Length: 413
Image 1 (tube, one colour):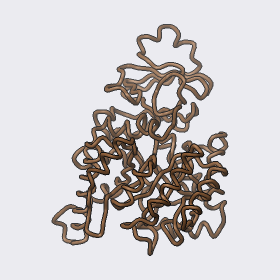
Image 2 (cartoon, one colour):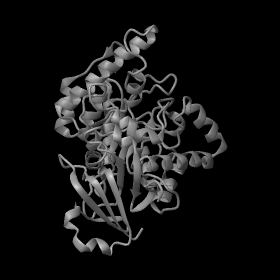
Image 3 (cartoon, helix red, strand yellow):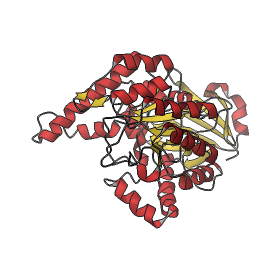
Image 4 (tube, rainbow, N blue to C red):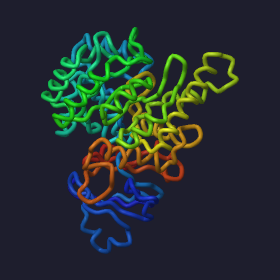
């Protein structure tokens, strides 16, 4: 698309308290060149080679999914799927990733931060999307994460057991092109015999990872479930904390002092809880299964953790953990909607949308996206209705542009 004018009933730039009514966005090539009110266009609108008018729709920045694994299937058994496909070779994993990135962008997600995929798939596929060879969400990639021997996701990670080995792994990932470093600080539920409620790394080893990343100009994302891991990551200066549940063997143990530290240092948390919240709607208190009741009680406490983090001023980035069980790549808009209101973590629709647009871009260091403004990358999403007043509208995409290229067209176009 060379030059395009898109008009809509509402245009929200990703930051403003309210959308512009009867607005427009002009795109030339891969960039936005103008944003404003339709009434201010005058006769200049006739010069555009293509005009897309979207009555009743809202135009907003393309969404940013801050936590994904593009080579995982999102089925009930993603690790079994991964191991089978990995035995077939990197090409099989790449096919899975291509499918995931395409379904992601068609749902309105124009950027994903991939936090764990083998380098041989992650980096070539990132380049293929950037070069326009395959349609998909733009990728920020860590490549291989860093974990301990036998630790969380060890099957596609660097296994490192000392601070020196961690530093070497950081250097290798940066050498090979990583945008971010991913550190598995605690164990994880997908990895048998790794303990998600205890740290895998000492404070010294965590500092080694962050210091080496800082030296090389690459930020660190830390997988952390338990309070000790979360505190170690915040103390070390990690850029983002993934999951951030404050979970222990005794239950959820939120630490206000750690939340205050995160707020002061600008350490963002990524609440990959939407899948659990979807399941909670079928596991309410009083159901016959005691496991369902326990699950509900735990998730209520976790929602309180995230509400407390928000109240403390800790930054938030929306991320779904796409690829893990029952977390499909085209499900991110619904996952985003699940964060809103009393059934979510208490966010307003605008707060949730900002966490997936302007706020996500700011905290992930994406300077060219997340906001509709001249000079920014033309990542745009149009949805039916007004997601700022009814967040459920975010699941109804009608037009998606990724870098100025239409990947989803209006019906009948």
